[in-house]
Image (cartoon, rainbow, N blue to C red):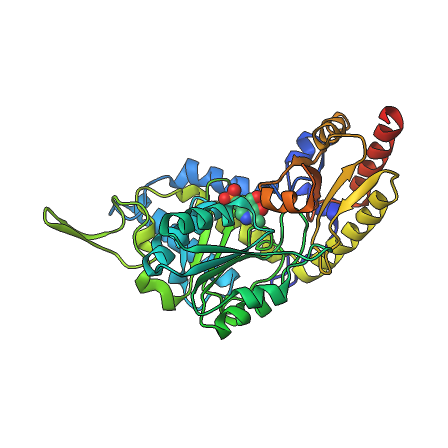
Length: 409
Ligand SMILES: Cc1ncc(COP(=O)(O)O)c(C=O)c1O
């Protein structure tokens, strides 16, 4: 590729970069909100690390260890640069978005909570950005305030604004809903929170890959995401903490790797981000995430997202045309995630039948039980598209659903 020139979206060419599709040529993979597939470049990078570079980081003075340490720290710069963070040391590596939220809750916010304070989350949060706050509020006798959604599946911004007050310790909001696909206006929400001097956490698990995030401009306080939803490996997450909070971060796990000095009398810790990376980190995984980011950066994300939105609109229309099929939510701004239900069939049965046609979708509550309870759906079928999906995939989904309906109902 010519340096500086981005690859435009040809799903067929993109698909070739992901070996799972050569392994299973029939596969229509529509569960990208759960995890994305891995490109060959990322698989090769992780393999090469294990074959040629394997060593623990930080401790060794020998060449292999020094090189692994260098690569690990270079990955931090790659991630910081990808999200336009103000400094490389804003980025800590965790096990995933879930752990990153738990760290913010227990190692930063907990310290500053006082009786009478409140925490603001929304009804459309993934359990990863709901339960840690619920547990924290219960443990500290503070109030958990849950922002409702509108009929279309948008966040109720007026209500959000009215729920944030001088006793709000944090606002924790998802960028893209993993169930409805709603894209929330994170810049507006960040400004809303900051206008009342309240810190804000953005859950970017569903958006970090394709929707460019400029942390310097956005100016949020915390942001979390997971490598495995970004064409990277399992077991690696990102936590971004704005410099104004670095000194307030407490260790999350205690152990080696986060230590300035240990005496029998007491221990002195390294500063953030190192004080969150206790024990031996997932070095190959972190390096794999950096490689995934290099893959993403080769693409023209703006045109890919446009193309993906167009494909999602076509999919929504084709699904809506199926008799007895109800789309769940119709957000003003929606990503490549669609939830639906088919009258007379349990979502799990729909997913099982689709599996017979090699179509992989998710059925259930998608770790958003409060949202589904509110909407009155026991479960939904969820289709989530990514950059390797094409019109043929959408047609196969619609055809298979139609056949299933004719056969069973
Ligand atoms: C919006 C959202 N937040 C958080 C998570 C949790 O990510 P992980 O399981 O990788 O920690 C997910 C996973 O599906 C998600 O969709």
